[in-house]
Length: 567
Image (cartoon, rainbow, N blue to C red):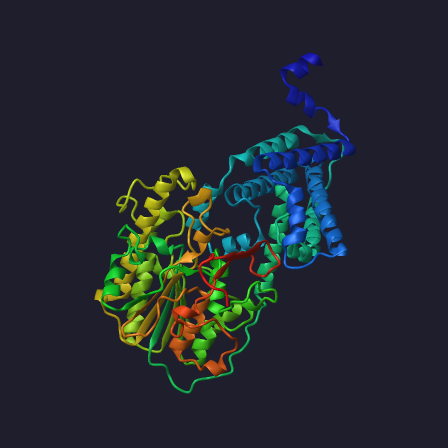
């Protein structure tokens, strides 16, 4: 016996059948080791996180809510142990399925923790499923992959291979375990979201919670209905309005804003001709694409949005339809309708996804969209057009021909670390130069624009560019992630004060003013229009990070500190 074990200890161990209590103990020890691994590797202080939940969220925690939170934390931990136990006491196919789920969960959650210093949340999954294309998902996967996920995965695989239970469970036991996980997390939905923190002492538990919450969010979004606009104009509009929402453009990397590199020479030319009005550094509504776009299209400026108004308040499309505009929505970055609710589709007359702009390399898709818009505004009036550009989303090298960067050396892989900051900036600036230069030269051909057309331009959010130790591009709390440009391009003279400290919240009323929608008929009190704002009207600006409903992980960041006066 000793000789056999010495030669092949794993084979010898596989001959030993573990009783049910033994596999449960193994599952408990394994789960404890993984928790300890996460504490050591990610330096997570769960006690501090838990106490922070009780003192820093949007409500006072009562005794029963604290008890519920403690109970839920214990339950999800117990479910993780049960998951491992059931996997160890099941047949080969179930073991394989359990392993694949576990491995994916570890890679996914550890990637978020390593890059964003937090586990994932439902908003991350919703964005990935509804917005990101194949190329973006590939880049994010390479950027977020974290080798610290491998030890737990390897150890779990070894246990699945070695442990032989005395009695194997039927496959339905594993399915029932997954159902139980979903039911417990569903029941815990309200408490977790009030907690406004990703408090899970195990990456696998957080993964289950994220998937459960994201599923309910996607189902819920299909049933949201917008409040109606009762006003209806009796006259057909005689102008065109183009609202361009770029992707991941930071204001201080545009030469039109004083950046030392010549990234936007054509915009500078338009400014010199008196066609471009520039508010310089503006504040985004949020540091994530979905949240920022939702705020732009609804004009919601009172955060947190505890009542879910962002999915119910009227959108720009509804106001445009009420004024008689033909509405267009172009998306050069996604095939799926992610920017709004399904109810919004009834207010969009024409929708073109990225599939309509694929006629060459990815970095030319925005230019094809610009050509399409240029044709519309040149041949007709009464058009309201919203474009979500592909822009310069990370991985930046996809925004320009890699064989001819404007600045080098450029990135050679998607690694986003401070030690490659110079390469990151070179790639980013090269992407801006290629993308914005070509886009605006097509959209505003030969510095000419029909006098009846106005272009409103901004970006959804900024980028960290791996500054100040950041290992993520956006979606977190840094101010740089909320820095965006804000421009108006018009063939007619506008009287505006560009010294006003602008933000995304000002754009909704600006667009309504361009539509000439009566102020008295507007459904909500929106932020000040840029066509009316003066420098003295400037007030401290804020931006949201994470969930904007006040129930999930996130918060409100201060964009101006401390230069602007309070109201």
